[in-house]
Length: 308
Image 1 (cartoon, rainbow, N blue to C red):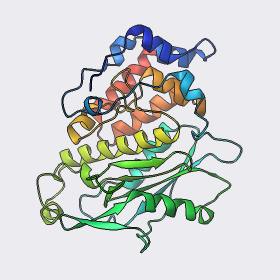
Image 2: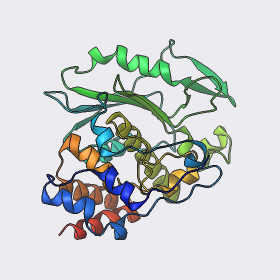
Image 3: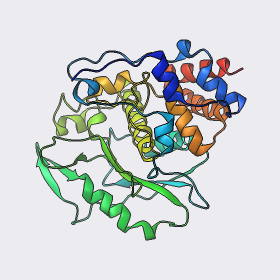
Image 4: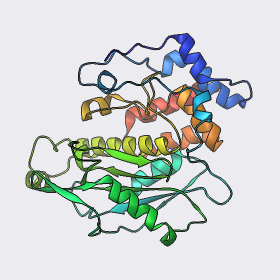
């Protein structure tokens, strides 16, 4: 499968009409672009774009997507539902991930719900001695329990879990999966530990969590939740720059992707949430600084300078 890097003309077309944007947003998607946003690169054999045909999503096609989530009336709350046990010495801090989601999806409320357990109705299979759950049954659970949340406030709901998940027979696993029409999703942190492919579950449990691994896990978990919720907001995989919304097949490719949206994807999200881009960038930079995401903090603060 051959991928052609988009030309500058195609990227400009994808960005769409920016003439009506406020000055800050206009600067955010046009100023010093070459200094902040790396161009997409030719994929290697195992990369997402080498194995999946992606035509790209322009601003115009994004606006025509009628199934995307968009705040309306009282419906502006993203519910994050922890599912299954997080009682693990290397589990990511879900409350911190919640903070990053609240900052990123500025204008929405983001609420972390009490943890619930898997139900007997959720199909699972054995994977190397560990249970692996079917994503569709978790989606169904989120839809069926909507009345137990505040349905007058709910915009979308996503489950997060330390258990491994799979979308259907024939697939080994999936990091996450959303149902766009129902505005629900489920995302697994199971494979985000650097030790996942290098040790048994018992060995991982016994290994102390270093600061280096803690930051890697946190960064990956934030990428997963923001990327997948971005899909529910109607953003398809990005092919225009290195971007949070790029598809990825593995941890190496995931780590290569940045923790920010490119100008095209930022314009799309802004058109739905109407956020203050300076406030979003400053808040996100401060969180990155607090939790040790140094390169991301540097990027957001440098980008703020370019908006002056």
